[in-house]
View 1 (cartoon, rainbow, N blue to C red):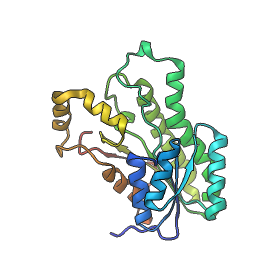
View 2: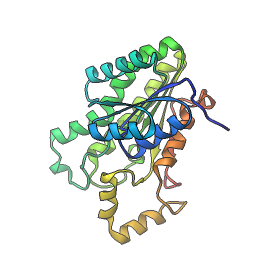
View 3: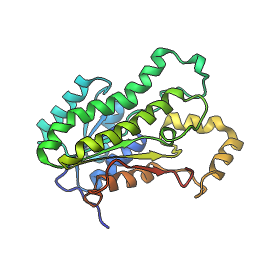
View 4: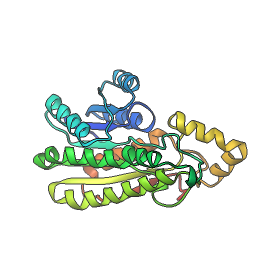
Length: 251
């Protein structure tokens, strides 16, 4: 099965590095016109230059920012048909007891992982509905399907909410030719935050983690990109509201 996106316009958020960058690279290689969005100004510019994409430096925590981003893309490329929301993350909040989590800590995680996904879908809906075609993929997490690590209260809650949003959008957008699905990665060493998390486990903790994975290896950004491209493809046109765990069998 060959997956191509010639003449399609795509947006990938969280694309300065890691999983987002891998998805954007795969889309470019498959023929899409790709726009990248990230809060990291220098990182998103460097990624865009390296892969041949269009950079947008933006914080997507507000409806206004999301609406402007989509409007800019439509103005430049004429349409928007593919959306992958890979932005988010733990924002350094790992391993802390619930008593140490401030209201600001809680809200910043939801803004990055859930609010931005809602605002982007809201902004992209008119263009996708008008064309009668759309694919939206959210990058959730195994932590959004079950309890996992101690000390990621806000992150786990936000990813559970993102899964719920994905399923609700699938129901609402389905009649308009728009599918909405989610990829839930297992542990992937994809950026400095996950590298620090990996190192914090120590040799014994790392060994236990890998032994709990059927395939006995960690995932890579390319593993997540491959699953995302399938959901974005024409071949997945009758698949919506689904969450695909890409975790080597750990789940």
